[in-house]
Length: 80
Image 1 (cartoon, one colour):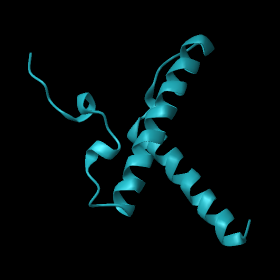
Image 2 (image 1 turned 30 degrees about the horizontal axis):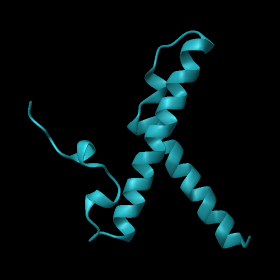
Image 3 (image 1 turned 120 degrees about the vertical axis):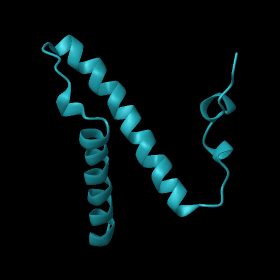
């Protein structure tokens, strides 16, 4: 991998952790035991990845419809 490729990967990792820390506010969670912290972090890591993926995808393909990334129940507001 070239230096540029390594730098790009590093930058994406930095952005991922920024989303995890700032967007998900992972540092504000007041969980005191490992058995509580681990599932919380695991869930927020998935959320942060999804936010980063959708953001990057939207920038690369701004004309692509949301249905390319989301199921109908994820983006439609359905009333009972």
